[in-house]
Structures are given as structure tokens and as C-alpha cells.
Amino acid sequence: MTYNLDTIVAISTPPGYSGISVIRVSGSNSLDLAKKHFRLKNNVSLAEIEHRKVYLGYFVDSQGSPIDECLLIYMRSPKSYTGEDVVEFHCHGGSIIPARVVEEILKNEGLVRYAEPGEFTYRAFLNGKKDLTQAEAVESLIHSKTYFQQKNALKQLDGYLGTKLRDYFNIFEETRLALEAIINFPEDVENVLINIEPTLNEFSLFLDELISSYNESQPYISGVSAIIIGKPNVGKSSFMNLLLNNERVIVSPFPGTTRDLIEETIVLEGIPLKIIDTAGIRFTNDPIESIGIEKTKSKLDSAQIVFAIFDVSDKLTEEDREIIKILRNKKNVFVILNKIDKGENIDVVRELMEFKCIKMSIKTGNGFEEFKKIFRESILEIYSFSVDKEFYVTSPRHNQIFLEMKQIVSEIVKRKAQTEEFLFALNDLISLYDRLLGRNASEEEINKIFSRFCIGK
Image (cartoon, rainbow, N blue to C red; front, side):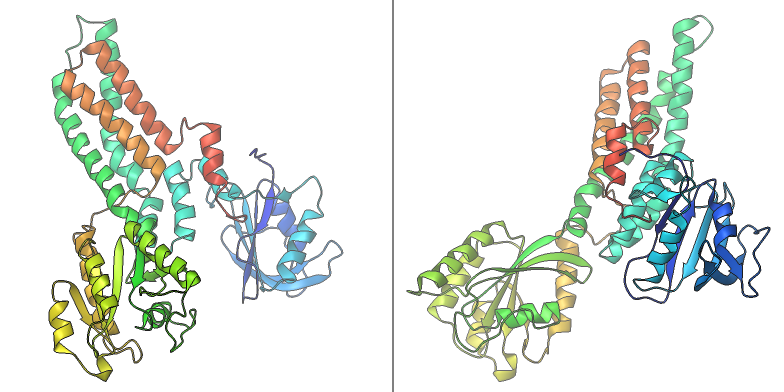
């Protein structure tokens, strides 16, 4: 992807019907385009547009005919999102008006072009408004699906990583310069290895924390695989619908309705779940249903969480007991004792006491809030989320860099590296830091990051 630093325009808000649509223009021609296409309410054009002042008027075409009533905001370089002159037209939403506004601006051939995906943030990166970790945080923030992702991305956008690492790397840079002086003027400069060793040990512990946070964050980022199992007609599809909060799965009183796997992604108590509703496990001569049951057993092997549903109002069947045998070989099992509204068979409760049980009526929703509470508490314990860290690494790119940093630091401390060897190691460490922040990242790496952005951001 190649960017030319001329003036660009794009719609920065999602398409569709909305109260407001924001059209953003960035570059040296922004102000001239604003003067050409904006008129005040009294049809007077603006000779001067003040920085960060909001104007109410009309967006007009090249003939001066109004297209929409809008607000105009001008942000002068470098005090803007991109670090360039930026103009924003806040028009009404919909499918016609924003497109017409962009179309009219693009008629100014040679002065402006349509923006590439992520180009506004790319310019912010190029102009030093954001380092590469902050630019990545913009994309993470936009695509957040949970409060965890949103909170963590915002902290990264605020420059958490750059700020926390800066103090360490200021010391490493000073040490690097001192080591070069030792090599060039050995009689005039004292060895600094002993002075830097405590900092290296402290930095190593900080890297351990970052690396472990990446592993711990994965359930929140990638999601947790979960499966719903039970005999036919026990309430699996109804439970799936309760989780989804709508009728996504066909619910029928006849056993064997779900013959294939139904997969959905939901967020339950802040945890993304890739959840599978399965064919009921039972003995059957139906070849199609049998295939579904075999798929269920196959998916059980890889599922991280199992929701097993039993009818607590009736006695256990042979199919139930087959499922119990399967559950004894699984971790993270949540047993749903369903149909509590119809009564409670105490023998069923006793036989399932070895598992984490929640009494519910899936039909009425009674017990669902208690289920969510138990689920959240258990997940926090299972994935070590009970103690909040200050920050979680969520990017594979960042984690790989921290792993490489850790390896270098460990080698320095372990081998008690001497002057020249220590200097080479510090150079490698500083190079990784610069790569993290985007100072020496490859064009391929940068293009890969910004290609994930939407147009207008």
C-alpha cells in the first residue's frame, strides 16, 4: 500500500441512516476546500476560518447551491488528529447526503483524492501524533466487542506501552553511549555494567508481566469455545436461545430436532463465547441424526467449556448416564439442572453433585441470573482474571517483540556480557523498541497493520 501525502477526503462515520455523518478532509488544501464549499446561513462565504471554532451553515456545490445544512470545524496543523490541516463537515446521515458531499469535494481534481483505509491514522503516525502501538489501538478500540477490549485499547491509545518502556530505554540508550565511549576511550570512562544490572533485572520482570498478560488475555480476545450437550429434548436449543436472547434455534417438542451443529458467537458476562448447540446424545437408528451425534462427541474434545443440561424434574435415563461418563473426563463443566419449574428429583441432584450445578427453568428464565453470576466467578478463577492487571498485551506483534527482548535480556544477565558483546545486545534491544513504536518497522509490517483499518479512520 502506497500513500501520497496530498489532501484526502472520506466519510468517517458508518454508512446508513443516522442523525449525523462526518466527512473528514486532511491535507494542505483542506482550508481552501472548506472556503469553497461552505456558506454561512446568510449565504456569505468565510474569508477566514478560525481554528477549532464551530460554524453553522450549508455545504454547497461548485455552483454555490446548497446540498445540506451542516457544521464546519477547522483544525490547524499540527493541532489535529493527523497533524495536518483538517476540516470536518458534520452533515445529516443517510445514503445520499454524505455521498453527495464527498462527490462534490472530489470534483476538485488535483486538489484532493479519496483516502485509503486507515490513512488518517497513518498520517497521525507519520507526523508523530501517535506511535505505532497507539495507531494499532485505534483499530482495536473500533473493533472492541467487550468492555475488557475497550478499556485495554483505550489505555494503549493513551500511550501506556511507550510511557512505561521509555524510562527503561532512556537508561539503555545512555548506557549504550557510555559503552561506545568505553570502547573508544577505555582509560577515561568507568565500566557501567554493574550500574545497569539492577535495571536489567527489573526490566526482565516487567517483560515477564507483559508476556504473561498476553496469554491471560486470549480468552477475552479470541474467545472461549463452549459446547451445549444433553439428551434430546432436554432444553439445549432453548438454552442457546436464552443466551442469544432471541429465537435463533428451532425449538420443537420432538426429540432429535437439532441434527447438526449450530455455532454462534456471544458475549456472556464480558467473555466472548464461541458456542455450539449440538445434536442430542442418544441411541438412534437414524443415520443423519447419528452423524450429528458423532460431530457432537468430536467437538467435545476441543471445547474449553461444557454446558451439560439435565431434566431435574425426571429420573436420569441411560442417555443421561452416558453423558455423565463423558463429563467426568472434561474440565470446566457447568451442569444446568433444567425444568425446576416442574419439580425436583432429589436423586438427580445427588448424582450430579460432583459437578458445578445450577438449578434453572430455561423456559421461564428463573435461575438465569444466578447462572450468569456463577459462570463469571468461575471463568475469572479458571483464567486467572480474579486480579486485574494494570494492562494486558493483546497484540501478537507486541508479544513477539517482548519475547525477543526477554531472550536478549536473559542472555546478558546469564552470560555477564562484556563490553562489546553487551553493546551489541543493547543495540538489538533498542532496535526492537524502535520497531515496537514504528521507528524502524518495515513497510510490509506497517502496511499489514493499516490494511486492517476502515476507510475514514
